Length: 270
Ligand SMILES: [Zn+2]
Image (tube, rainbow, N blue to C red):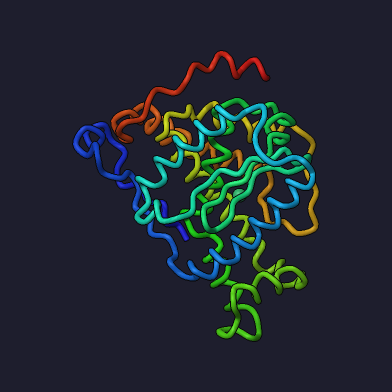
């Protein structure tokens, strides 16, 4: 599961390997066609819901969202073999209560309500989008399909649709895979933090969102498919020294990236 291998973190390597990817990422290639078909179905469903609620599309944060998504995506497609072979698209809604999530085919959803509710600045938004992009390029849904198929009685005959349907009603199965799902969240956090740093996002500002989650009231859930916020922050902080180094050198590690825009303005949101 630990595919994020840091090839080298030293100043001499930065200078020597300017055009080489920093990471050796080899995502699970299974189920691409099936997951793409399932993604199209879910996309149509969620887009229709947002349109019906008159909450589809960006209004307040269009520039920040488009800029952040483009920057992080440039890094992800550069760092991951085949990273460009997805239907990448940022889908913005204004659905109350929605946060950010992604489909296996490369559609990344975020709600402006989520940005406003949490007073996210541009670096935090970029980290959230990088987390979602990481789920896609790390092929977490393909991993989950493989894992569930090992656990269900119908085993090798299970389709992607069977897996989704079974997870919907089988609480025991969900409990069995919850630790794996929680680990995927941590992996998306640390990979997202690295991608964001390589995109010129200050990692100390980027994880401000996690710090605010920890400071807020704890969230209860029946099944812990997400790690606790404190664990997310502690794990991300372990990788801060590496992320800071990548951030310091992002201009040479990710060619053709413009400097991150002035941060003074978006701090006014805080
Ligand atoms: Zn996630």
